[in-house]
Length: 112
Length: 113
Image 1 (cartoon, each protein chain N blue to C red):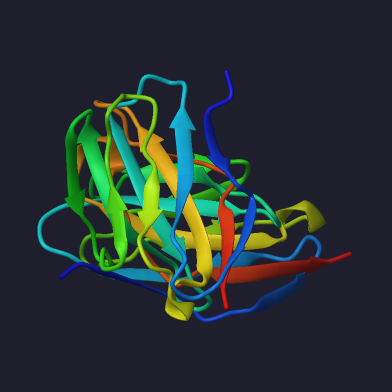
Image 2 (image 1 turned 135 degrees about the horizontal axis):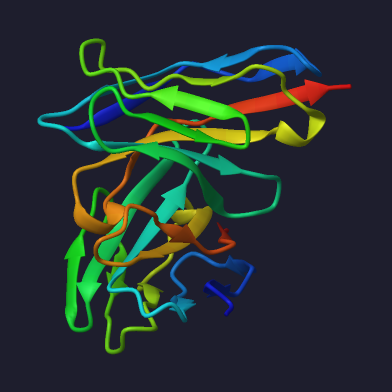
């Protein structure tokens, strides 16, 4: 049981490049979320999903896209990277009827 | 909208000292309240939670009580250890599965031997 996994662990991009951050969970959780962590600001919600085929925006969605074609996977796409997207990105999942979100180890992204 | 405010860090204590990290929130209704901990180089882990007023969450010697009248959820531990050094986040959620968490800014705690 791996829990929530994220790849890559580190990534450096140039401004304007695109990439996908991968997230997968093996706990059959309905809910999945993406957060970004910036110094002094805690974590902020980017996008979330309540089930396969259903996604919605969080607090800071601009510049990011998501899709959820399976229960297990919830990739985050940066369409055209900007320096303001330099951050640590965390994926999380939780099951219906619980009050606990499980977090992945994070992806540290630097945009030059 | 909802918000969470934590005491500013960093906080540095000696081993066996008493710890309090203040957390207050602004929210409509009755959200669930959480403390998450992040050890160096790792993701966040749930430390404790409380889902209704006057509930006390506890884990690993840490405690926090949901105070509706003061909109607070302060984290306490009677005797800290070096291994408690981490960043602590207070958070709230209105939603099933604790999704859509709203986090405070985090408090970095360092315990010296």
